[in-house]
Amino acid sequence: MTDPVAVLAAERARTVSRLLALEREFAAVVEAAGPAAGSDDEHDPEGATVAYERQHLAALLGQAREQLAQVDAALGRVADGSYGRCLACGGPIGADRLAARPAAVSCIRCADGGRRRS
Image: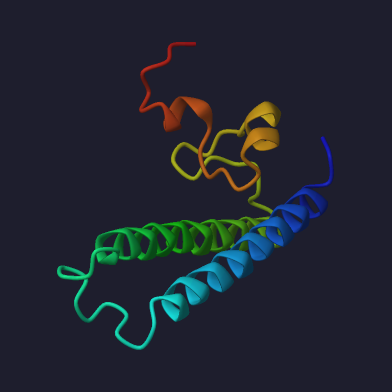
């Protein structure tokens, strides 16, 4: 198994970079909308587009912040020795799953709601 700290640190760096880029993009959209940003989206011909773009970026920012929190929590699990253990059943989280989702908190069986059979 690869070093989980290195994998999570790389994931964290990518997530922080994405978060910063989204924050810059969000600020640019708000600034481009001018001082009346959001004040009358209904009557501005481009208001709906600007409002959609703002909301879309806000959703992406929320996802990036959640991803960062998940990675930080995974780093905490590495530190306390519980990384790689399913929080639901206590069993191991497979290496393939951790490779695909380094911050995973559940084994594939628990993530699948127990629908998979051994």
